[in-house]
Amino acid sequence: MIDLKKILVKEQLFDNGRDWGIAALRIIPSFYMFYYHGLRKITNGTKTWNWLGEAVMPMVGIEFGHIFFGFLAALSEGVLTWFVIIGLWTRVSSIFLMITMLMAGVYHLVDGEAGELAFIYFSIYLVICILGPGKYSLDQKIYS
Image (tube, rainbow, N blue to C red; front, top):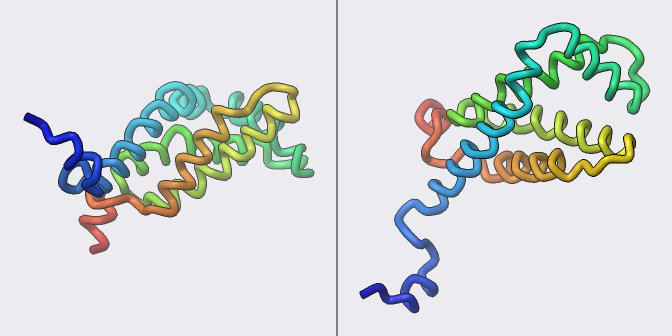
């Protein structure tokens, strides 16, 4: 029989629980970010990148390089999500994703929409950046 009291008092539900939690936090949201947002942006090319740059960059007073800045957003959502999934250069990738999500959230707020999804993603990547990639990552295998 399961001793519920023992489970509730124990710091971790199972061995390496913290690392498994970090891995789940890295993998699941990053896959959804890639599949529902990044894949389309990275494969649609310069027309989409220009639209992204034109939509967001004027909010911060940048009136040039729209394709470049749109490409950076597409790169973050379409490629760097995979770096986070496998745990390679996790903190740097998370910082790029945080910037992208902050800009997306502000864009939606200024446009009169709710930007909660972008801010939820921002929060997830903030936590990943703070905690690091965890034990089950390439960063851990390569740099430890």
